[in-house]
Image (cartoon, rainbow, N blue to C red):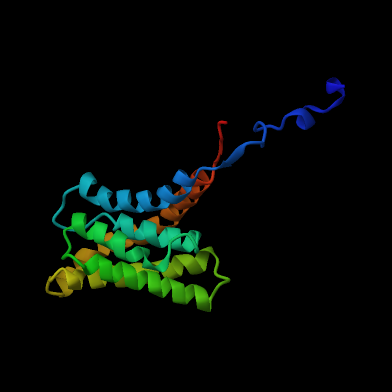
Length: 185
C-alpha cells in the first residue's frame, strides 16, 4: 500500500509539516538585534573624520518599517534611538528624537498611502534619510555651512544607493526569522 502512494504524498520535499512552527525567539529578536548591530557597525568598520558610512541602524529600522509595516511598534524609535545614541557619538537624545519622529512619520505615510510599492518606498526612504542626515548634522552642534553640507554628500550618496540592498537584506532576515523549526516533544 505504501508503494502505491506517490513520494510527495508520503513525504514532501522539506520534510513533514507536523510539529513545525515559527520560533518566537527568532521572530521577535531578529528585527531588534539587526537594528542594534547596524548601529554598531559604522563604528567598527572604519574611523574617519568625514562621515562615509551610512547610518546603518537608522536605515535598517527604516527598511524594517517599510518592508514589514506592522512589525515594529511606533514607540520602537525611542529605545533603538537611545541605543544608537550610546554608540554613535551624537549628542544623547538626537537619535531618540529623530528615530521617534521617523516612526511617527512612517505611520502617517502608511495611513495615507497603504498601496505603496518598491519605488515609492525608495523615494520615501530617500527623503527621510536626507532629512535625517541634515537634522543629525544640526543636532551635532556643527556649524552648518557649504563645507559641512559638502562633507555630507558622500555619506548621502552611499546611503541612497544602499537603501535597496539593505531592504533586500531585511527581506532575507524576515524570511530567516519566519523559518519553521521542529518542536521537540
